[in-house]
Amino acid sequence: MTAIEILKKLKEKGVRFTPQRQAILEFLLGTDTHPTAEEIYHHVKAKFPGVSLGTIYNTLNMLKEHGHIMELSYGDMCSRFDGNPKNHYHVACTDCGRIVDLHSPLLDLEQEVGEKTGFLVQGHRLEFYGVCPECSTHKRAKMN
Ligand SMILES: [Zn+2]
Ligand SMILES: [Zn+2]
Image (cartoon, rainbow, N blue to C red; front, side, top):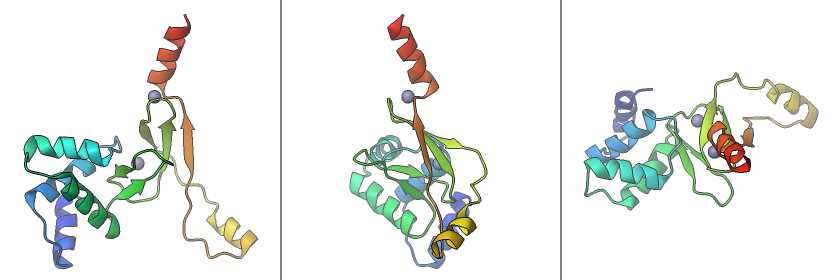
């Protein structure tokens, strides 16, 4: 969905959208870096110096509640936000924390899990982690 389509949907539900909120949404839809709330704040602040971190969090929570974005949480690390709310897999770097989309089809396991456990399976999560190419280059450079 584009920002315009999301704005229209939310307007129908009576959600008020300020230019700041719109900037938050547009930034998230236009990036695949899975930014933290702080990163979104710094980006939007460049254009709207009056924006507060509270506005960022309120807007992110609202967009999440309506199913337009995803929050990715990794233990005690800061949550990351994803403008793509459809289930997809991520690879996280354990050194620098960057998170990359994995463009692969979802595993077709839900029916099997349902049959084996008797659960009505509604979804699944799968996370990959390791060392990103940049960090492994740095590591190799340090060892030499
Ligand atoms: Zn890394
Ligand atoms: Zn993603």
